[in-house]
Amino acid sequence: MNNTQKDKVILGIETSCDETSASIAVENMVLTNIIATQEVHKSYGGVVPELASREHQKNIIPVVSEAISKSGLTKDDIQAVAFTRGPGLPGSLMVGVSFAKSFALALGVPLIEVNHMQAHVLSLFITSKERTEQHPSFPFLCLTVSGGHTQIVWVRDYYDMDVIGETLDDAAGEAFDKAAKIMSIPYPGGPLIDKYARDGNPHKFSFPEPNIPELDFSFSGLKTAFLYFIREQLKADENFIEKNRNDLCASIQKTIINILVKKLQKASVQTGITEIGIAGGVSANSGLRNAVNEAAKRFNWNVYIPPLRYCTDNGAMIAVAGYYKLLKNDFASQSAVPMARMSF
Image 1 (cartoon, rainbow, N blue to C red):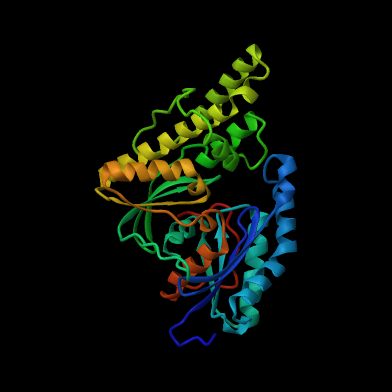
Image 2 (cartoon, rainbow, N blue to C red):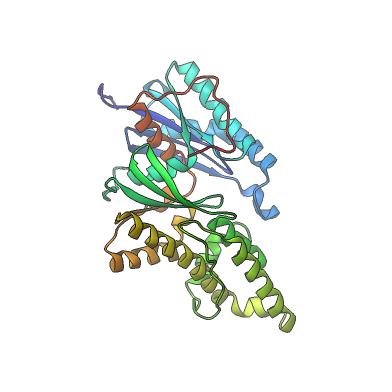
């Protein structure tokens, strides 16, 4: 592939948690998006930070190599290296940051630091040869939902964003995983709850929704209520979960989604914005997708959701986020260090 002068080829590297991912993008068109998922955590019921960083060290070179080779380009075509600086697990971030700095230095190309949560928002602008979906118009609201974050973001431009609502304690993805653990559903439990919920009755059981002011969220009380409910039912019938698994999954999923959609609807009313994006790992949940699309019909929203492969942590969103920074010549230095907590 011969690139014209205007083509910007970006290598994106993502290592914020337990997925090692690399992507090659030409401007905002993704050519490759390689993800190595770490299976080692399943037996522990959650991500073990030390094991995650070790797995990243094993995976980073093969993943980057595959991303470049399958793109049809060579490393000499790369014009910038974008990487996740934070937020995330310190040890995991260190692997990606160190590799990106070394690789950019060796190639003599600029280095671009990316905020992981901003990259989820910008995943809505990813294009590919097979993707024809429309992108949101500015301004729009983006509900970013993942295992570690739940936010409503007012997006005025590619890097003009404000968080106008966020969780005060636990994230929506964490609530899914905790509920799954209570029901002895293997990690990661969120996708399995979604699977079982499809065959369940979402109205079989009722769980409390928190009364949190304004546009913020809270899921800790819901998790506790669900735990106590299950404990009481098991006292009466030790097979309660097995007998009601699909209905339990459908009911807890419905409650979490109701909380999310109600706040999003409130944000739309307050801001007058009807361009709505959903991003982050939980945006892969079929129940949430269906609920937001149903809400779109009621409230006249235009809804945008990335393809499933760009919902979870991935290098493509880092590459594309890097492209929009490259346009502004917004580069990082070789002194950049990981930031476990990184402001929006």
